[in-house]
Image (cartoon, rainbow, N blue to C red; front, top):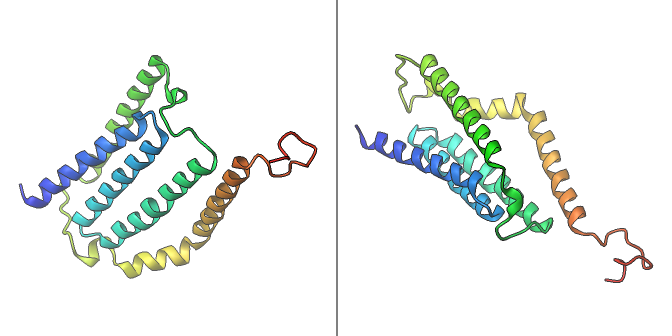
Amino acid sequence: MTLLEVLFGLLGLVVLGSGLLVVTTHQMVHAALWLVVCLGSVAGCYLLLSAEFVAWVQVLIYVGAVVVLLLFGLMLTRAPIGASTDLDAPPLQRAVAAVVALGLAGVVVVASVDAFAGEDIALGSDDVGGSSTDAGSAIFRAWVLPFEALSVLLLAALVGAIVLSRRDIGAGEGSPEGGR
């Protein structure tokens, strides 16, 4: 085993552990912070695979934008900061979710092993995974409309969170909430 393989395995364990903590923690803010660890570790895996562009996109878009938007949404909607019992599921529902998750993980592993069985991928070569130029042209030519639609959707979600958090918007002077 090389050092690269050991680091990749360790980052994979961090991704798995922090991903489990995201879905099992009882505090929303902690779940968001564990999501930062998980997504950052995925970016580290991309770096080890010589996909620097994808790693930085992972950091900028997912860690930098999505998690910050999630934290802003939590703060603006006055979500509970401490432990919340609303996040608990009945034991039967947890068992069913665990069985479905393990089944899906098995399908992904079997499909990945079957798809890449016997293939040797040379890392660091532009002809195998494409270049940053190819990725940039694909994003800004073919995928620019979905990218912009997603940005408008995220903006609408943020504005909606602000409106929901401000209960005094639209309340007149005569209403019980209007005097604040």
